[in-house]
Image 1: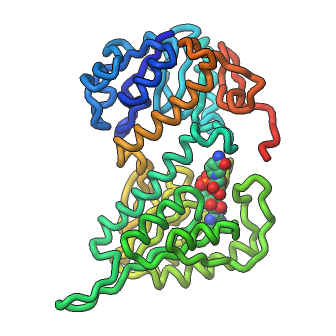
Image 2: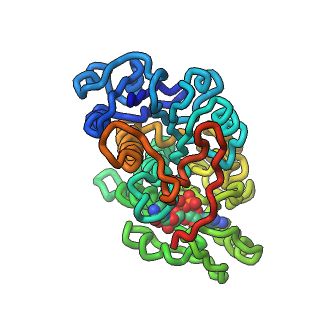
Image 3: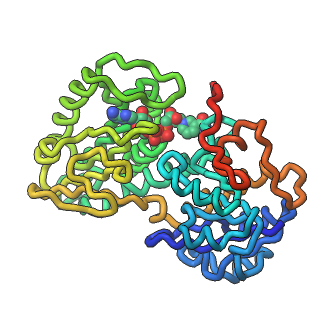
Length: 372
Ligand code: NAD
């Protein structure tokens, strides 16, 4: 079968679904690979690099399997062959109409963001690999706008205090942000309703700030919506921290719900002028009152709130490298014969979960399975 690697049409997208390195491995699985001209340009991968890897450059939409980063537009869906398979970030929970369009086009669709979070599927988990990059980049964005040292210094010209950074939510993105901020020399604190993250926060150089209200324990490692008592205690913590810290990075998400509100306008107003907030939950409604998705805004008291939703794309080459490797690992799973033939085994929970449309039928959501 032929795999097509297409150029992304979403504005500001710099990633590409396969790199020259992953193309080589796709060829090794028995596929022919065609890359759309300039598909890798924004990630620094030239057409020549893909040619050198063994791909062709040409019409990548006319393929049996189309690899993408973002969901295809209606116009792009129309370019897919009947019976083709398309893989990308499809957000099946948020976009039922997209699934219907894909089904109407008689294709099979694989949602990379529907990979179940079990150890066996970790190598295909783009949400984690992108969250890791985005958490790091959030700190770089904050440092850039902050315009001061993160690390404390004692110099002949005087003393510079270290920056204080608060990370709200210590999942994959939050932990990456903690690591980046502490390696720049800042004083880093982090809070999360899941107390089991305390050791991870510490091992990355941060201090864990607990909210001392007992939370219902989650059974799947994900946060549940927090209780009103928890939220009241957390609000106090955020207000106290807002007065003290220079940088806040918020990463709090609850699967299947809008992002929880952590910082109010009053908290932001209590921050020092020149402080910076990066709201990594901007695309899901934001953790901070006043966030504008996709933009940086400056409040009346001189606090910059960054709501960029393309943080992973701001490290294009590595985002593409990790994305491409996750996707390659999925294609490997779906090519057990290494014969260039994609097959989907619905008895396998991973394959079942990612297949959101099969040959014209919407197959999302998958049946509930125990992943413990
Ligand atoms: P996420 O993106 O769903 O949420 C981000 C963080 O926000 C989480 O740590 C969550 O606890 C926190 N949060 C939720 N409500 C909050 C609130 N009101 N205040 C502050 N913080 C709040 O989470 P994630 O980054 O995807 O990771 C969740 C967990 O799953 C992690 O422990 C991670 O290690 C684990 N995980 C496991 C696998 C795997 O086994 N394959 C893959 C990915 C993640």
